[in-house]
Image (cartoon, rainbow, N blue to C red; front, side):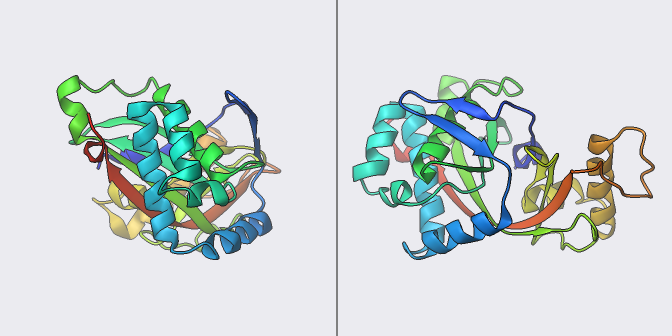
Length: 240
């Protein structure tokens, strides 16, 4: 996959308007994330939850919001409506092409509502092309549920490429997020320096005047590492 599908830069409003509700995107709370993960683990296999999320993304893309909302409430993927909202990342990937991405932190809603909001925002991601009709069948939804966050602002070397992703926040919203796969892809030519390379990218995002060898974040900004539980669903699973 292209690395661009696994790197997310944010800076959007904190409120997402939905048809029947408003999703309030909150600042990341590590204790809240862990509590919500405990609730989701009590519902069953978390990889299956991620796979169901990917399926619902395909349903919404092909059949619309209400079809996905119905399927997520009473259909085979109804576990998603029983789960609380989690930090997550969505990307639409084709044969060597990215067709949209979206990322979300925590929110005061269900995982279903959170997910469907992400699908809508990914559809409005104008950085990426619209697939030709003949290419739609090759598109895959990839959903990563983010977990095991740790604040490494004071110890930015304390993470492992390939296992951890990196989440850089201004204290309210994510500013730059690298999934574990993105780190591997971006640093494929020099894996031994992956940590320093990613930190340099974060540093440039935080302050263009900062010295790369002296990693510092502005006051109130935070650097987290995280792990992921991911699921995929080919859009060809549904009638085209």
